[in-house]
Amino acid sequence: MATKSKSPRKDLRSPDDTPDPSSPDDPENFRHGLLRELVAHLRENRTQLREVWARNILDAKLLSAMTKEEIYSEVTSVYDNYVEVLETGNVDALQAYARNLSERIIPRGVETHEVISIVLLLRDVLARSLFKKYQHDFNLLNRVLDAYEPAANRIANTVAVSFVQERERIIRQQQEAIRELSTPVLQVRERLLILPIIGVIDSQRAKQITEQLLRAIRQNRAKLVVVDVTGVPTIDSTVANHLVQTVEASRLMGAGVIITGLSSEIAQTLVTISVDLSKMTAVGDLQGGIELAERMLGYKVPSAEAAAKA
Amino acid sequence: MQVPILKQGSYLIASIQSVLSDADLVQLRDALAEKVGQYRARGVIIDVTALDVIDSFATRTLRNMAHMLNLRGADTVIAGIQPEVAFAMVQLGLTLEGVGTALDLEEGLAFLDERLKSHARAGA
Image (tube, rainbow over all chains, first blue to last red; front, top):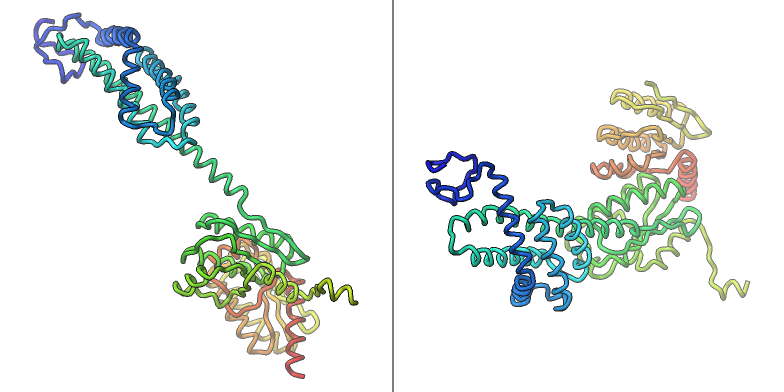
């Protein structure tokens, strides 16, 4: 082994011509030995390293959404998890913890970059402490870092991915919730439906609304539909075209559409982008729309006074 | 596949039962144009309830058919377009402009009655 070793390890850092001090017949075993040593070192200096890390976090003004005490307590758990992963190489526990942590901190407005910075800070703090410990033996330091770096990067990766996954899960959940409470189609009279639209309409929602409306038209044998857009804040050409499509599709099913609640801004937008609204009947507000629809369907609704006189 | 054309009072009812080829549609158009004259029909209902696809050619033919029959003196209404079909048609930009539409056969009959009444009022 004193000559040039053709070891399978692709070790770019350590010069090939130096003999291996611990005679690594099995490089894996050797690495494990180093990791064990590393873990022991990190356990020993747990309190001090944790302090340094927490201070770094505070100095970098990360996690501003959390109090100092919270940061300290989370730091402790993350540190212990981190060391455990270094020891066992098994990221499952850390992954679960990271998910759980993300679930707690995402609603408080913690950003992705903060989480990643924090994990990288810990990696650097630990690396510094390794530098300090092994500074006298450059070769050994190299090997320790060889063992440490992939594991540390893997941890950083795991935490970041867990955080982003958790965030995506929350977004999906919220989208689901919005869809659920989306758009009721209500029958107010025989053959008359109202469809109050509230909130922003995107393409997917517009499609859903149209499908729902068409199904309701068939189910209730509707002749007229009053679509109320009072709750729609803004409108663009895409949304306007969706509205036109909804009206057209309803007409193909034999139902007329009355649009109500077009605000002055929306009306202006529609004229500016020159959407063809000639096929739409528009009435100022929902009340007017329903009154018109009743007249068109032949309902006569006397006012209370007229009814009293009669 | 021939489309049966039924006479019901002063109306003709063409009930499409299965998918039609382009040639079938053209044939239906010619048959209707002829029967409208033969029976002196005042209204025509084309029932498409059974169709689950209405493509651009079918749309164009139906529209032309309706305009043609109007010129021959019969109001025309397309009845029974399915929700999915309506949605797909609108997405493809096919809108049957200027053609009466109704939910189903019953609605179609009511639609024609209404039309004839308003014509009668206009004439009086």
